[in-house]
Every structure is written in C-alpha cells, then in structure tokens.
Length: 488
Figure 1 (cartoon, helix red, strand yellow):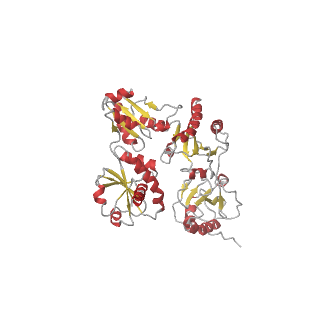
Figure 2 (tube, rainbow, N blue to C red):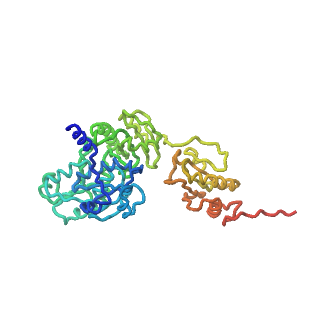
Figure 3 (cartoon, rainbow, N blue to C red):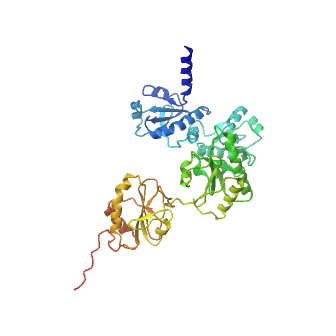
C-alpha cells in the first residue's frame, strides 16, 4: 500500500507550482489577501499562453522569495467565465495587476521571467527599501541583479532627496535600497554615498564589483550614471534590457544560463570582457554583451545565422548606423579584438539580408535589400508596399496594386514598388510592424506612411495630390486629364 502513496507524493511534487490558481468561486475571497498580485487570464488552447507559461512559472518562483513576496496567479477563462467577464477579458493572455483586492492597472510589461520579476518588484512596496540592520543589507546585496544603495546620515541631504526621486523613476528596472544606520554605514565604509553593487554572478577581475557615484546631486546625472554603469563592461543582454545598450555593440551568442551554469557562462564572458577592457583602456568606444543563442534565435536569423556554434560563441554586431556585421572567424580573443577594431575602422562589409536582384519586367518594381537604394532615390516619387507572402490583406491588395502600376506606367517621375519585408532587410527610416505597410517617398524628401484607402482610385488621388511633379495623365484632384484635340 505504500508504493501507490509514494508515487502519488512524487507526482504531487513534480506538478507543484508557485503560480496560484483562482476560480469564479474563490477569486473575490483570495485576491484580497495580496497587497500586490499579477493575474493572468488565459485559455488552455492559446499558443501565446503556452509560450508564456514557463516564463510565468519562473517569475512566480523568483518573486516568492522577494522582500516583500509578490504572488502571481492565473484564471482559466474557459472554465471561469464570470470573473473573466467582470474584468473585460477579450483576448489571451490578458494580464492585470491587482492591489489590495482591486484591479489597479493592465500589465503591459515584458513577458519573459526577468522582465516580469523586475516590473512586479517595482510595483511592490516602496521604490527604495529602507535597511535598518546589517543582516537586511547583506540579504539585499545577495541578489542576482544589480542593486543601488544610498548610505546616508539622514533623509534631509540633497543627495538623499535626489536618490529617492531617482528610485521612484527607475525602481521597475533596478533594485534600490537606502539606510540611515550607522552600523550599516560603518560595515560597508560609506558615508553620504550612493553605491552601485554588481551581482555576484557577474563579478570578475576585469571591473570593480561596486562603484561610488561622485557627480552632482541632480536627478538627470544620477539616472544616467545608473543606466550606464548597470550594464557593466560586458552586459548580460536579455529581452528586458536589449534596447538600453549603446552602439556600436558587439554581442557573443552562446548557451548563456545564469541559473544552471554560472561557471560555464562566465568562462566565455570573461574572454569577451578581457578584450573589452583592453579596448576601453585604449580609449576606444565600443560596447560588449552576451546573449542566449536560444532566447535570441530570431535575432541571429536576422543576421542570416540559422545554425550557431554549439561549442563557441557566435559573434555579431551593429554599428551606430544600425548596420549589421558578422564575425566569420572562429571565436578567440585575438579574432574578437581584430573584429572590433575593423568594425570601428569601417573595414567590414555590412551584412544585408536580401533576395537575389530580380529582372524588372513587371509594372510593379520589385525591391530587395541589394537594390533598394538604386530604385528608391531622391530623383523620383516612389510608392512602396512592404508585404509578407503569407499575409491575407497583402494578397487582396496585390491585383489592385498591379492595376495601379499599370495605370501609371507612363508617368516618368513616379515609381510603384513593393518589397517582401520578411526576406529582405527594411532600411531605416522605414518601420514595418504589420502587413501591408505602405510608404510614399516624395522626390527629394523624407518618406511618410500612407494612411489612405486601398482602392486604385484612392491611390491615384493621393499620388496626384502629393507628387512633387504633377502627373502627366492626372490633375492634382486625381481626375484624368483630357487629351488635347488636334486641328485638322
């Protein structure tokens, strides 16, 4: 009889979850038990919900250990229609933040574990935690994330007031704490100082693990200092902080895992850092980071890298113009240093995702990465459709767009063009976030997004009005010009 019980116990442990589950019958009674809680409204069949589930679980486990703890919960909307209807859930997953039993705000933050943890940590408790005992300070600094601590004699100094303002503004992205305790100040050797502490997992011999702020007591300067210094000599780049890193940026992609393999992760990071320190000491301005090749597989695909190395980091970069570059040599510190110097000296050929340059034998000109600048010039007006082959709206537009090009085929100062934005790099300043996206590039001017109708007559009226040079076949109001009668 013991064997079935043991099996049951093991299965219970295996399925244990730190994510709370609420239902119609207990939602109202349980939600009030939490000062701050994040609730996911989901459907079991939802693909986005399935992708979120492991990240949500990891975040719940991490936030359970937070001080104060923050809970994460979920509600299955296919089985609990009453509570989901009450909070206006119309898509999945929908995430909402509740405070003291009341819905406080929609959650619009990151949907990976680190981002969820940082966002919800910032929602719980004060922006900066007050440390009153040495043990509290030790616990705060025993973290896997950067922490900023203000060591003050009192709350009345200009630096202390500035610190609190900055903490309020940045608490969702970094941990803040402050103390007025003489014992804590004495233990750490600071007095009216603000100090940035690096997490132990990132400690190395190439940079200091703690840095003291030495500039003026102004909010702008302190915020800028924290934002810069919290990335370090070689940042651990995640989807949560990727947009905060400066360029030119060189990234080493490999099996980055600070949960299960800190030593292996830092083995390669330290080699990147050694190169970074050498270049920094030489006065060269270039930034380095490491990223998980699995978490950033989509980004590697943008560099044309579909099979990154399993043994060594794969290295890619973006310069200050956002051009892409790939290190083709096998990873080594010498090769990385050479790559960085050639990037800075402009000696590398940018990588451009592009289909082969096509023969232009149709009314609609076909743009690819390699011919975009040749066709979209300042010499002519250009209408550009950015499309995806699988897009239903694009397929519906295609015959109309072709008809438009045929109607305007005799206009010498106007080009009707299209680009498959899934197979080619879209150059700046064009931004494509959905399909189809249409831009009009006036002769000699900057492009602007087309927001008009999608019938042929809508396009003709728009182009007739906006073209820099009046169309031969149409008046400015979009009406077809009458042909001049010839005398007999």
